[in-house]
Length: 129
Picture 1 (tube, rainbow, N blue to C red):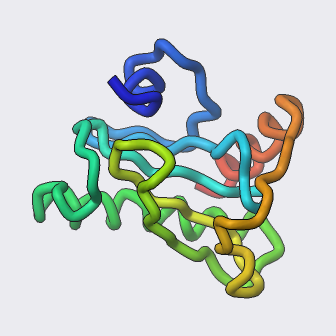
Picture 2 (spheres, one colour):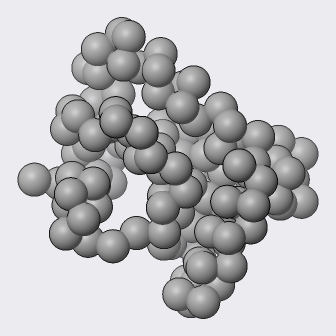
């Protein structure tokens, strides 16, 4: 069972942004930039392109209002999207408020952010959904 599956089942808490029958979105607790959200299918599949076609298409549609909320809530040019998939063997996408391509550079050190700051980011995003 992956760490994301444990978040989905509630074994591990998260800063939930949105949830449906098939997907969950929550804040990355070590973000690249403030407002970094993970979108995860509840189906435990390792690689994004092993996710069934209809499910994969629905994942983007699920992510769309979250991306729009990110663009409204944070000072950014757009919401970037990235799929890396090396850090957790459970398909997921990163939604990141970006101003430059370097904002999606996963080789940079991740931010350390307090629980209080994460709660503020969560509330800011939820207010725009």
